[in-house]
Length: 216
Image (cartoon, rainbow, N blue to C red; front, side):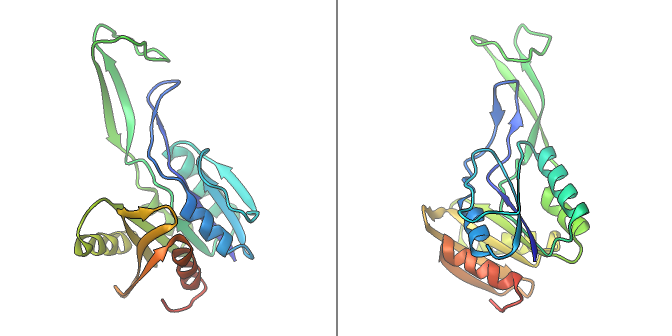
């Protein structure tokens, strides 16, 4: 099988030396690649994302949401992708403008010592919403991360991501339940059924099982 895995987090530029990013490590995505080592892996990741211990067919490093969109599009265009594990934490917003008091011209690097700075953000396009178009026959695994919510709210949000984006599975997880390799996640299928895993390895193994056609 040809499997596309996205890992880490994107960064949107503020200026030539600053950016808005997130804390995603890519460790779960790397674990998925290791569990599926016998298959042909296309690993799309940020610069600081964890790398698999196994050797992927191709590693494509990206920075911004636009970079990610282009990489996914190109890989799917030139390869028949059988499964996509979209574990990357993708920026919800990009920087439309930066405005500083007393400065009317945007400099490549924002000077220090300003008394005020306004950053205008606009929503990015949801990459997960494009995956079915790029790989219509692939098994698609999406991810939903929330922070300190009820179990019911987390599962409902995961089911919504699954339905809206035509995924086959969604892993719903809460930041409060992630501590190193201890990682509680609920893998939801199209029927609304789900299994609960408690480590990164068990999550990766369950995802691999689902991709290969096994029951959760």
